Image (cartoon, rainbow, N blue to C red):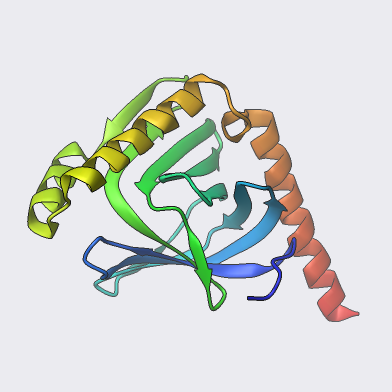
Length: 184
């Protein structure tokens, strides 16, 4: 696998436990590479659903994909503040310029007020039953959710508004530099 560098562009593919693709994002630009995770950015990117419908994201997003954690974090930079949408999911892998992970339904939504809400519990229970999540997987998924909440309550850098705004500015700087280098 080629070395990942700042400014590299990837696609994102989200799968379900049964191996079927769930959703794809057209763009994720590498902003930072840490020992345990990689930070990506995108803005108004095309999202294609499994059934073929598509839509575009409305705002810039800073995304944290972890090598060994069962979640990923999306920081959405909106006019009224930063919202976080956190997916309980497998650690990511990269294949053929694509970030891939399996989504396990449970999500954590964090609002600019600091309040948070666990989403999609019924969807999780439904998929657990029809896709046969075993007891071991169920424990790993629930531990992922607990770990994520602890990370948030511990004020880790992924949930730092200033840091996410800096990453957002850096994302637009990278785009501008790439645009200018294409014209020279």
